[in-house]
Length: 225
Image (cartoon, rainbow, N blue to C red; front, side, top):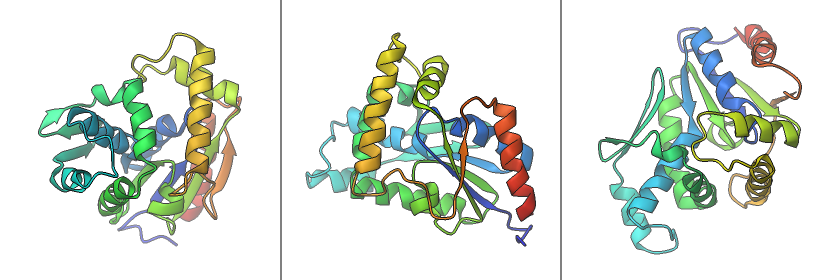
């Protein structure tokens, strides 16, 4: 049984368009938990790297950049990201930021920097972390782990229609192509590749509506409480 005073650490991993973010937000509200959008954290660092022209992690100055980086995250009612006190929550959703975030996520310095932050935020429990390595790397001993997936055509359609994705191409085939490129890069990277975490519950969301996915996951969570 779970220590109810502490609560659960729940992780939800999977590729883009599988429904992770929407499902995690709804679950967090139902359970009264905090929703941790780890993707927003990587996008925040990527945006900062763009602003300060620190796009080469191999350079010695990149260590200084991370050490002095003033980036903060607010995961209450809505994900907020602040850089030097400025709200950049909208800017991090631009496609160019997403591509840089994917590249920087392959760097050990960046991953270690954000993994430490994620563990610090989630260590007390009562959290749902959503991303691509939350159950495999960040919290491999989470109380319950999920991996959401869906067929490529459906994932592309969802991302194409997602209003939170700012400035995505108007051609759904282009969206699918970019999505598949990132999937390959994330799956093949040496550090924290996108993979089904050991012990995770795999759920194919193809053809399922959000309520159906949420209810299926809640069924597993109730068994832990």
